[in-house]
Image (cartoon, rainbow, N blue to C red; front, side, top):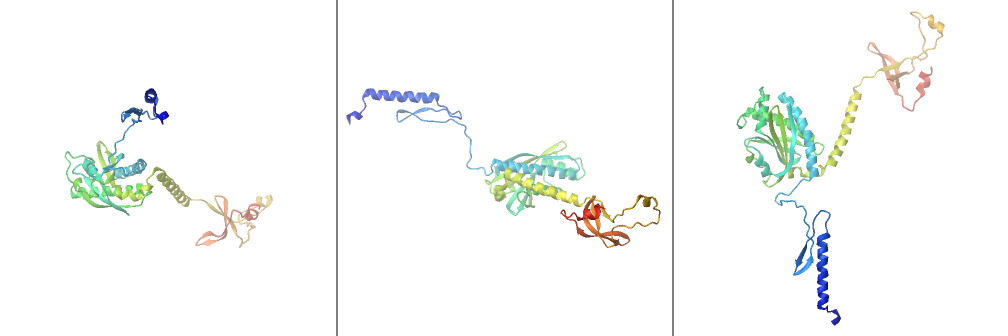
Amino acid sequence: MADDILSDGELDALLAGMKDGGKAKKGGAVEEDGAEEEAAEVSGSPIPVSRKKGKMKVYDFRRPDKFSKDQIRTIEMMHESFARHFGADLSGYIRTIAEISVSSVRQLTFSEYAEKIPNPTSMAVFSLEPLKGLAVFEINPSIIFPIIDRVLGGHGEAIAKPRELTDLEQAIVSKIIEKAFVNLKDSWHRIVDFEPEIKARETNPQFVQIVAPNEMCLNLNFEIKIKEHVGAMSICLPYMVIEPVLYKLSAKQWFTLSKEESSKETQEILDDKVKHTWVPIYAKLGGAVLKMGQIVNLKAGDIIKLETGAKDDVLVTVEKKPMFYGKIGTKGKKKAVKITRIIQKSDTSYERKFLTK
């Protein structure tokens, strides 16, 4: 047991070695992210403890993020398309150019969204069947009054002080919102086919309670430009409303659906174009072989006997390509050909019968 006890000199040497090791680690060890390591004294002994100094991100547990960055980016791309098409429809309705663009897509609590909306404003609470719940569509008074003025035949003048809308103005705004809903439905149809329907109209955002104040929502903000007037428009989609289709809201999924639909739409367009294309069709009655002397002596009234029998099929060509066999006859007061058989690709018998003579 005596051999296991260190002498005073051995203890001093051991402590000195620990101090040197701690200094070397403190001065020389650097993590990949640039964080330094410091030595700390624990229980009165110089024991090196690693403390990383890195970047910190503030996280509020009272309002957790519900939407991933990928989902937000996908929704932004969808509504960029919505903004372009709605801008075109609105331009036609007010007979002047209206430019609409997405300014931001953020996730907020419903109370935070309501606090940012001016009072009075033009708000519509709408449903999105078959999705459960309600959403909000809002157009800022700074731009809604120039739009109303254009619809009523004016030059698109704004008013000095915002006020509540009259019944006539409410009816005009309802038509504008319905036009927006048509484009909103089109922008979402690759994800879910819903039917937007206005359930209520309101001018004071504090009176709109579609979800609990602390419920997370997706806030889509748009900028509308009409001549010198600039205003805002927004859509509020509660998380609980679009949660059933969130799994589809990824850039990869959206582009895959877009590509499939684009191919389908392209095929439908091509089919429609082909079906409405005019092409020449000829029915070859037959032929005959004459000597040059006979041809020179031909005169009006002469009859040339064809090699085709009266009851034989004739060759029908489309764009000079053999496609059908047919019978010659009449329909009303005009000559006609009745299709009797389709020439298959593997069928070359028409060549011997019609093309070699």
